[in-house]
View 1 (cartoon, helix red, strand yellow):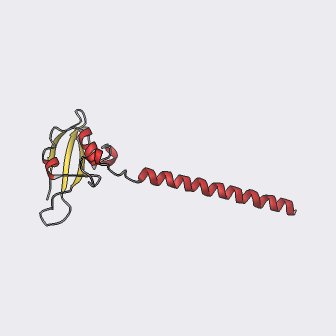
View 2 (cartoon, rainbow, N blue to C red):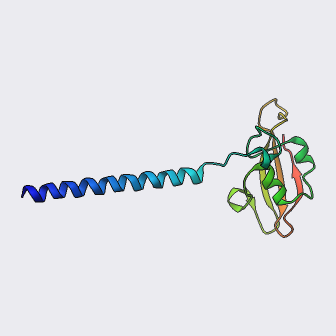
View 3 (cartoon, rainbow, N blue to C red):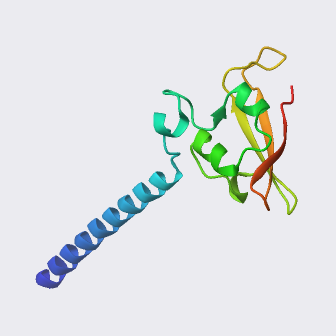
Length: 129
């Protein structure tokens, strides 16, 4: 009886350790997938730039630029999962403007660009507030 109990304890502890390792590995994989990749100077063109931000000038001159151009600037892919407005006519993306304040002096100026999904080019932009 002691041998069966001892064997059961060994098997239980081994399976618990495997379960814990598998859960730990799984959580690391999920965290890695969810953590935004940091932008490198080669991706953004300027060292120390925040991922997902563009400059005031880049927003103003965005009409006619391609999706790939903005993906390189912001450091991630633009697709329907990160678009607040996605239709068959246009895809909307919102970026924080790094070198401008909003009209109330706050730190939340936004550039909204609209990309035509057929041409993958920016058709219009907007900088509310």
